Length: 250
Ligand SMILES: NC(=O)c1ccc[n+]([C@@H]2O[C@H](COP(=O)([O-])OP(=O)(O)OC[C@H]3O[C@@H](n4cnc5c(N)ncnc54)[C@H](O)[C@@H]3O)[C@@H](O)[C@H]2O)c1
Image (cartoon, rainbow, N blue to C red; front, side, top):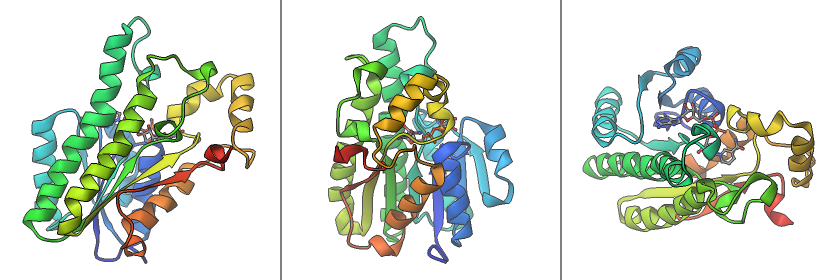
């Protein structure tokens, strides 16, 4: 077991990649705390979670209190996986682009930064070191194709910012033994992409952008998060790993 004796906090744990990370990390011996705004999804994980609590990652006071609770329940927080995220498709249709942009940035960027700084403060206070895994995207690195985007689409802006935050946080965390890395998934079969996959023509077009000829699974992303979170990645920090079936290779 690769995470024996470790404690992990996973945001967005109720669904998709976060749920897969929580489940795999539990199987690998970690004690896992899962947080999400979707409490039904957390409950569905059952025994995979040692600690489950509703949390909106945009709420600084709630984030700070949650991180303190997890640290006192577990005695330490070794690993944080930031999976809470939304796209402009989650925002009501008649929302102005500026409001939609802000809402996506608030969850994907500010939420990630709030909980990461709170966890790193605990890791510094307790001198435990740690590993943070952020969820960026292929669209943190390349433009989205016009069939699924517009120039005001906040999603790629948010994911590129997550990559830069990853580098900055890694440099600041390195002297304290805290590693910070990111994953850049291609299209993964989760509720986040369900709306796109409902359209058969668009689904086929998305598949064709991945040289392996299919979309990914949340478990395939979770296994890469496990690598970055584990001691196998002890000399890896401030970087990103594409989990994209070759999307970025074209
Ligand atoms: N699915 C993909 O194709 C894909 C590709 C690249 C990157 N990602 C990223 O991976 C992460 C996980 O995506 P997923 O596909 O598993 O999506 P998902 O929709 O299945 O899960 C996201 C979870 O985040 C939670 N969440 C949303 N807003 C929140 C908030 N304010 N506070 C706390 N929790 C909140 C949701 O309730 C949900 O459970 C996201 O950051 C996403 O952008 C996904």
